[in-house]
Image (cartoon, rainbow, N blue to C red; front, side, top):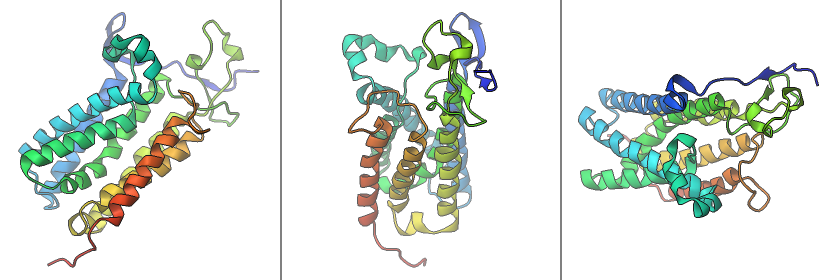
Length: 274
């Protein structure tokens, strides 16, 4: 097969100080996501759409960062790599080898928000409705970092924009024998990042739902994220064994949809602005 497709050779290091030590794009992606989230939350406060000032935002983001990192890391092994952690428990601590799960990150953030809300004596949904509107920014940067790393690549494809990922081949396989694949990381960046961010920002700024119906935005986010994730999973090569014939990303997303529906059905009806 002629090499008519772009070959992924992107170095995962932005700066490499020595062999295996340096600043990775993946770490920068997380930093960019947290900065973008904090900036948007500050904008909400400046516009009078949020009661949380800069000090509260910094405090909240500290909890969120911990929730994302711990939840994402532990969730990766619990949801995708349980067998490997049983045989090698220390793998959890080798963070330089990668391994984060968005569903685990969501659970970590939920716990972090609940903890923070209790400390501040505010309702959880008042916090979560703000956080879900900024979360897609982190998903966007994270998926772009997945592409740069050449991980979580898509299924074999012959579309003109397909990419040859050397990481998808067996060690030593000649380049001309590696089949091109969907750049599913970029599909997910567009869906979970751009589309979801636009939807959440539109709902936040153009409606009064965050004030009038606490919890509804959180439920809408869970449903929208899951639906968009399922679309992306159609093009993504499963990185773990299937569950009931579907990818794990799709399987776990079903539970988020159920949670989202339950939250929406229990939110109060819209009240008129006074």
